[in-house]
Length: 466
Image 1 (cartoon, rainbow, N blue to C red):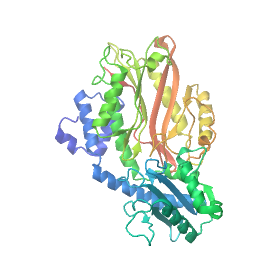
Image 2 (image 1 turned 30 degrees about the horizontal axis):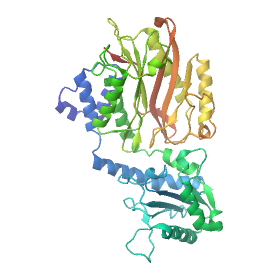
Image 3 (image 1 turned 135 degrees about the vertical axis):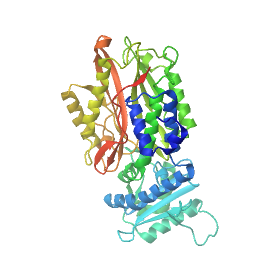
Image 4 (image 1 turned 180 degrees about the horizontal axis):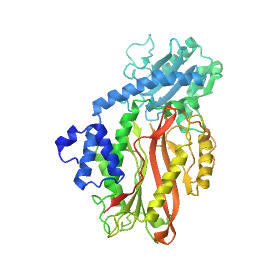
């Protein structure tokens, strides 16, 4: 399998993804060279930088033309202002601009004005570019050749508002959602000063609008995301193998930095520093030793990894388990295998309950009740994912709060959103004298329309270090 560069080039993408799933599930035990070649082949199939930018620009066009107008009408927003300055960007800013834009321009003010279903949403930029023709750059006709600046920029904003006379002017202020709280105190003060009492009275908080806009995925994103997940699975299979780990010598920190180096060398971004956790007989699951750097990995250890990468403005988040085989073993002991099975069962219970129209809190309580009825000792702390690792949308529990989360947990699930299905189960292991084994699982899933499915495939077998 993957014996030559010619065979890698000729294998279709679907075939490479299928091989990645097989390797990651332990159905086949690739040699070190074959596993590395698979990663190389998967990365080679991803679009090059210029093509990435064009793809992302098309995603942006779809979001602005199809997603945003529906949301403005759903929330009764006639005009929406996004106001921010260079290096102090609103969280929604990067979901509104082209991939070649890396910061706001001095001060950038985007004005979205709904002219009705026939004419659509007007998109105006007061400061900055047209973002590849997606915005109309608004300039003062009396000042040629210069960008908007200072009080002149604010005065033009007021003029624009007076001409359109919106009944509501939504701004990004929220006590609950960071994604909806991008208007800084300084910018708000200047905005209210220039608008005066008449227009300031029409300001409303746009809490749901930026939150939902960021969270909704366009269908064209999913194929790229599936390729990203295949790379992730490939890297985790290699991280928990003899390519990286030599029992009695390699530390968990060595594995962490191998993953960081691979991420960098392959051209991906990192949104959090990975962790590798070690559990073994005689070591309590919550032992500080299990979380400490430089734990030497030994035979019979159970390993846990939490890893995420960033590519084309999308983030992944994955947790998998590994086992270091003892002499004479070809698989983990039955009790250790059962621990992963219990976590998989908890995944099933949660996935069956994630449906559009349900709140994160409702899903959490329903899942915990089903978990207890199934005799599983676990916890659920699932979050949206997409433009951000911890994405916009409903929280389904927190790792240290197995109870309804006011505000963030009250948000409803929407069609065409993605979730990182994050949870854990604790299982007594007979082979460890009844000592509990903590199994953490995290796998990304997508609501395709209203039906949720795994982006790639979840882990059902341990990665094995031979």
